[in-house]
Length: 466
Image (tube, rainbow, N blue to C red; front, side):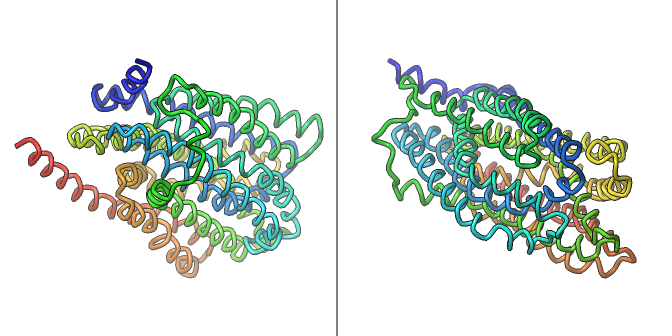
């Protein structure tokens, strides 16, 4: 009886009206991502006001390292959660149970190994990314603490993805809320009261994730749920590891390319930056500030992706293509609305928005506002491109998702970053302009691939119904 009650919750993914179902999944994820983004902004304010401009510039240099660690965690979390959604759609509950154990073990292994390896070469990496004598100290201090808690971060994000796949989107939202709330309490305490500086900001992040990780483990220990932790599932199985990593590979490549792009941008900003006593650090800091603001809008779309993923995966597994296309259509509409609103707000209020991070540095504020306006110029197109990449990933079409993941950053953005600066009177403008141009090209490629795939699903749907 318990199993019947527990499995009924998964079957709702293939029965409830798609619009309401997407909202019930997406709204908690969007709220959670928005809360996380708000904290990302608040954290930047704490660091900027409590530690100083050098710390803000140092945080920008940490972005490539954090993208690299996130790449491995996302490969496991996204791949495992997508595979679980498909298996639940196929009513293979034994496989879903085993996926949980494998995701936990893979995150522990990757988190520990990656954290230790990066710590050994952290200073040379930061120097390669463009750190100067002015910024190396804050960047190194921040990343040292983050890497010590790397396994906690991997487990936290991995289990949150599985909460959504097991029809508990509100629990995933509460986990994010808890992390943000604890973080907001600990960061000012560690920075302003204990005077730990930028290490305090990093420690607050790790501590908050650890507390909520304990709560996630408690949720997955409930034996009344078909998918729960137990000793018998805690061993790696190649039949789960291989497809999980394969499906998660596009997300890995997205983060890996983000790491590569961030390296090129920070080094370009350093090289082409204004010839002040900071030697380009102003431009690096400006990139970091505007990136935090843009990430706020992007995270809302990512939340929408997280809401779409289990619904799309389940209905694809159940071969309910009409419902699959409905959730895709709704997701694209909502994502475009989000990015258009973000475009309008950032374009109108660029200077006030960036001023909250570095009001005592007019040069940094001016450069960040200018970069934000350029970067955001084609943002209404970005929502569809993000949704399309996630859609192919959520239904297990790893090859197409990988191509779209690579196209925007590796095939389009990187060549532009390496050529456009030499075509502008101010080379830094060429670096900024590369971002919206690559978004426009990626939008066109995504549209062509998506239209072709939708037509194919419609043909298959008609064939099934005949």
